[in-house]
Image (tube, rainbow, N blue to C red; front, side):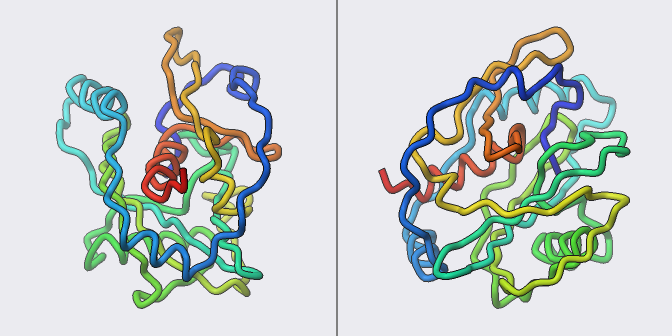
Length: 227
């Protein structure tokens, strides 16, 4: 799943850049397991939720379709890395956007966790076991009509990706600590279909991370905030 706005005029040019802060100390699997279990859940921005509800009112099918994304974390040298994908450029919806591996729930999936695990393996060839599950964030409704559940899981740092070129252009990693920096993910004005919206976004190296992906990462970062 990816950012929910399909038409965006030159997003990289619109993003307000910020000065980099000193990187935080590395975040380990042990640290995250303790921190996540002791942290109260963080609720999504009410304006984001309302936009999704308003969009659903304009659709003939007023029911959200359940979906899941995998927040996959690999630990290297005591530091957790978040796996992110760049969607294939030929896709009809959200081409080239940064997203988590994920997709809609299939009838054969036993639960939302299986959906996330299956989609990750299908898209990037990375596997996970249920015992490596950390937990989930609250489901997030999107303007495209999905109710997306982020599933947080650990994966082997020595994974060997197998990219499905029909869905994914590339796979890359970002240190989890990058998302937890103060004001790393901020609301930015985006011009969408002639209207200006304030949408969560951040830049990492050459990548623009925005929309649903940034909204989920912002919620996770607020839940784990060290500030």
